[in-house]
Length: 423
Image (tube, rainbow, N blue to C red; front, side):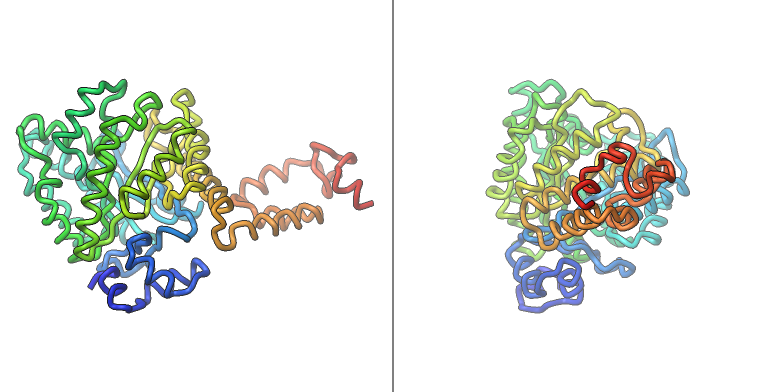
């Protein structure tokens, strides 16, 4: 049985117990929330080296890091270093988005080493295998997409992004409305081109029960992808995006009814004043299913700093009820991220998630800030650094201060307000 099916029978599984302990809530809360579909546990029944991750309402906002090769850069060892960097920086999950080289070998290496859940976008591998056969993606049959999804499920992948809401109707709606950026999701674009060439409906939508059956067999979470997410602020909250979201809500209900856990993916690029409305809309249309957002990025003009634009949007989204943030690195829109980019991206998203958690009163969130504030009041630099979200960076910056300023910082020196009021 899946976690959802066991929850419906009143069973509190070991994964639920561990999640409750990690979150500081009662096991019954986890069970009941899974039963109502507002919490999921991402753990493929065959991925035995991880504990699983609880995502959803009333829990700490989680952070995902994307890694993976490209056609221009293939290095398994580098991807494993990125995995380690993400985990060390505090990522709760990692997605392997490899599109170059031996993607099977890369995914296996990542699954074998990762202590956190692993997600994928199977359609990337489908497209890569088409190229290896000297075929275009649009020449493939729908069966080949499902075969890759099942292969990855058998390997132990914990959650998969599937673009089931990219339909002939939603794509046509985007064309009629007119977007600046069109379709920016790789999976969404591939699916739209397949439908255009074949003059057929998206097989992941048309044969959705088959997808549900695969997910149920392995207790793999379906992450219903936003293939029509806005790629710039001007395209946010348009008809195509909303139509896809309505479809995803319906598909989420179908999977839920069959005992399959689901989360919904969201935008994307979005002005600050639209973020809260989008979160509320998703929760209403998708029956409170966990919401997994990329960013949102709140401006388009900051290449090189998009981890910051993403963190701003992520904090607002988390505060409004988003449950899972997909990190964005400084190299977004520019190149494949480096190991350092991965670290910076995770830290930025963790800051956003924590800020959101304080706002929505997540258990224990504010307590961390109070501890650091007391250490700061006591001018206890070692404790401040220990409690910080990135102790290595805090230590490196602090160590540049001259020895004579050991009890203050070089910003204020002898004029330190805390020191003055304590003397």
